[in-house]
Length: 291
Image (cartoon, rainbow, N blue to C red; front, side):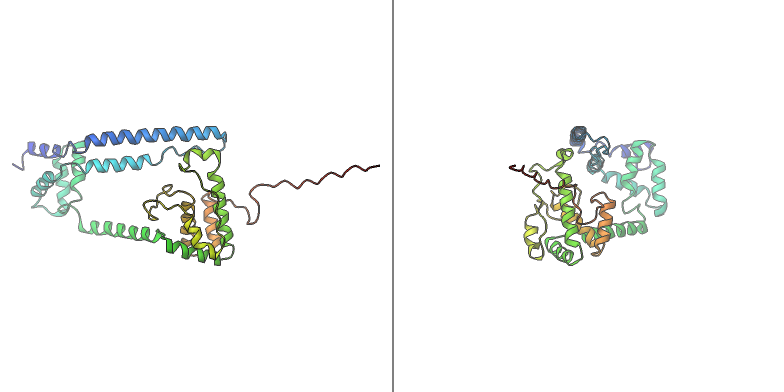
């Protein structure tokens, strides 16, 4: 029964339809609708700013990632086990390195065959143990880097204290926050602001102000482990971004400044120079003589 051509077509088609197909269609429409709305808002804000030299907005760069996640969730609803059991029984007598190519030769060409093959190639009976070990090693190393990039409240306080001890560390940090606040308060960024607005600029005053400064930051409801750009409200996101660069460069302030300037997050003006040219003070005109 497992060797007939009709059984092959039947097993390849048994993966579909997905159990999540209706919800996936609604989710796809919702993602595209939200992306179109955000693109319209970005273009409207860009046109109101009137700065033709400014780059065009990125136009919902998160859409591709959201669609990929939705496709993965939809595929998780496929009925896999009957096909996997059939493919394992069909190739039980073959060598491991020949099993996947044999199943590929049996499946029909096209979307159905490729879809079925994509589900079976990472199972225990078909996957190469060496490749699996290397892939697990990659994810473990990536997870270790992610854990090293997370900053809890204690580590933030420690980095801020070390930052103050460095020459020009506190001035660079406060200037970065001030420039980010000025950029976020500009009219052209009105569409990307949080609903509650941007809080007033709050500089770091010194060692005695580390914990009060951290208390003023708005914590994300998911905690400080949220690392995606834009998910933490400013200025908490700006503080975390600067401290991550400070930690990556091992406390070397010139390297931190050079990195932020290269990323376009900080201006290259020397410290102490005002952001805008201040007008010279006007002298009072002399009073006319009584004579």
